[in-house]
Length: 301
Image 1 (cartoon, rainbow, N blue to C red):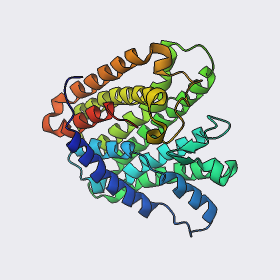
Image 2 (spheres, rainbow, N blue to C red):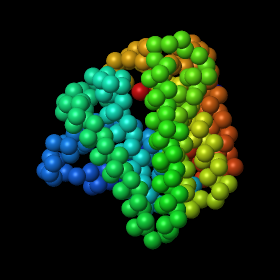
Image 3 (spheres, rainbow, N blue to C red):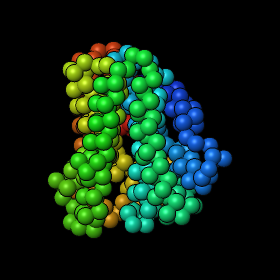
């Protein structure tokens, strides 16, 4: 892609809103001294293991399109991050991906045991919906928006979304990779939550239906580009930058396995172009979304 990202602007946006999310997560998660302490330690261990906080920032960006201030959407943004973290805890379990490392340190089940990792993930899942409902504390967010946002999140993470993608991923593991499978797996497993985050932000912020549709198209293309780059980095990325062993997806259906590295890069570029094109009707309101798409295309971890 010839168009260069406004990298400092994107980095500043991610850093500023990442700090807001980090502070809010610390407020909303039970302390390690709150009984039962062990599960709260496991929850915090996983949530504060690092990460880009991309999903909560996309909730904030979606609400920003409608003019909602970042601090007013923080409970819902934190909900998105808790859902993402719960899914990682469960994906890492021996019964799933059996991953010993995540974000540069031992995974939750390695430190706390399998049973406690399952419970920590369950607890994060429950807390996420509690926080999403707490958006109602903002006086400008009527109950019908909350109900719609809850529906969006449940669809995004259920069998028609993230969970369904994980099921297909497990079924396809070790089998011959094919184009239809890799697209469907990643549309559901990764793309559905990214799409939901943007829609939830728009819905809670009071965006018009036209703007929510723009956020939907952007999210679908951004999710595709993000996953393709993730697959590429698993092949070529440096282990220290990724925080996990490279080649950890060697037995999975990935874009490089199906298309090869060069074609995968082209597909990521195309999806990014489509994401950027989809937000053009927003004018200046789409600047941060455009910058994020370009920035994520060139990420190294």
